[in-house]
Length: 313
Image: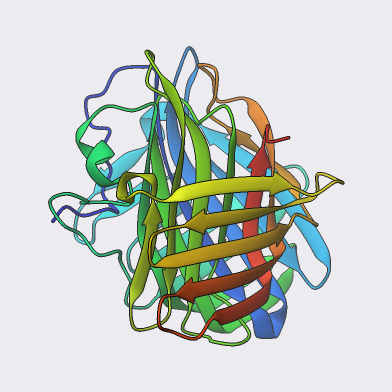
């Protein structure tokens, strides 16, 4: 099966974007960091790295932009390169500096936990992987160990027991409306991982709402997807600072409750440009209820999730 980490945009024409989402959490240090390196080919062409950092009650975020011709893919090991930035399946090294923050990052990744693949479903997109859609999603690793160090504005943070997550997006635009959440740092079971997304998908002639999700219990993957017949329902909290997602299959169900505190602004590719502001938190409170026929329910909670809700009322 295909490598989900690899860059897919060689030779493509505008409008196009492709980016990686790299999340690191060390609950013992009250530390969460998301890095989003990517390439955007719109009327303005650029490559970039966005960051969203939470540490001991403080949050910072930003976007560093580089000339598009400084983006490169190299082998041995296969890596994404930009000025003072390198990402591979082995780790990430970077120096990110803007007017407000200065981050030095040197992190090593352990063995990835990928999704199961088949001819029908070579990625989380299922059979939609074989056709052109406005935004194709990929889960590269549900969970892996992380160790190393981050120096944030002069303060050294040693990561000894970090957990990592990685995903990707590519296409011409993000969905106009979506919710998304992720965590692999649950109090009740450290081996569990969760990814969930519900989005409006525009096929030009028809628009539908699709859901994709994976709950991994440490031994087995439990996938929910519209292409498998999953029914989905999203209800926003009255204060618009959280939501509940309910996914139901014939033999199993998943309920995920999310709170969006500590959100910071990031930029998303939408409406033919890399300039649409969204809010994301890397410190979301998430509770999960998973039920499967002939099995005991599973209840999980975390204060270290990542989450977004874009144009969902």
